[in-house]
Amino acid sequence: MTDEGGENWLTRILDVPVGVVAGATYPLRAIALLLTTPKLLGYIVFPILTNIVVGIALYVGLLLPGLQEVQNLTGAIDTRIAAWVANLPNWLSWLGFSGEILGGLLQILLVLGLLILTGFLLVQFGVILGSPWYGQLSEQLEKLKTGKLPTYEGGFLTVVRDIWRALAFEVKKLVLAAGLGVLLLLLNFLPGIGTAIASIGGIGITATLVCLDFLDSPLERRRLRFREKLKIVLGFFPATGTFSLVCLFLVSFPLVNLLAVPVCVTAGTLFFCDRIYPKKFAAIEGGDEIAPR
Image (cartoon, rainbow, N blue to C red; front, top):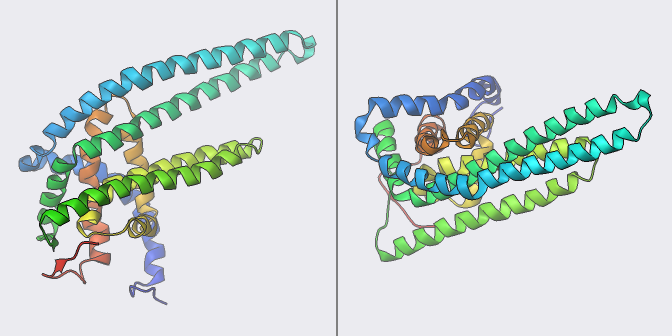
C-alpha cells in the first residue's frame, strides 16, 4: 500500500526510529559543517552580534526580574504551607515536607518556563533581525548540498510581497499559538492531569513554532503557504519533533542561545536538504521559475 507520493507505508514505519535519532543530530551536524566550511562563517557574524544585544536586553528586562518573581512567589507559597501545617495535628506534620517538595517542583517548572519563554523570544527577534544573513546562509548551504536553488520572479512587487508574506507568517504563528494556548489554558481547570497535559502541550506548541522558524528559509524560497509549511513539519514527524526539541533546548539555555540561533538555522536547512527535499521537491523542481504565491 502506498501514499499519495508513492512511498510505501512500511518504509515510513521503519523510518520512525531512524528519524527520532536523526532529527536530534542536525544541530551537531550544523556545527561540524560550519567549522569545516569557512565561507559560511561570514554569514553568522552579524547575527551573533545581534543575538548578543537582544539577549542582554532580554536577560536584563525579562529573565532576571522573572527569576526574582519566581523566587518571591515560591517563597510566599512556602510560607503559607508552613503556616497551614503548623495548625495541623502532630501526626500530619509530614505534610510540611511534602509542601517543600511541591514548592521545589513548582519553582523548577516556573524557571524552566521562563527560560523557554526567553529563548523563544530570542529566536523570534534574532531570526527577524538576522533574516538577510540567514537567508544568504541558507541559500549557500542549499546550493552546496543540492547543487541548485529555486528561482522566482524579481522586481519591486516581489519585494513588497515578500515583506507581506513575512509579516503574515508571524501573525499566523501568533494566531496558532493563541488558539491552541486557550485550549491548553482550559485544561488547567482539570486537577492534576490537566496541568500536566497543558505543560507538555505548551512545550509542544513552542517547539513547533521554533521548528517552523528554523525550516522557514528553504520553505519560503518555494513560496509555500503557512498551512503547507505546517503540514511539512507535521508530515516529517518524529524527525521534526526531536529536531525542534533539541533546538528549543539550545535556544533556552542561557548564553548558549546567543550562538544557537545561527546553528539551528543551518541545521534547519540541512534537515530540509537531507530529508524534505528528496521526498517533496527533487522530482518536481526543474529550471522553471516559481511564481509568487
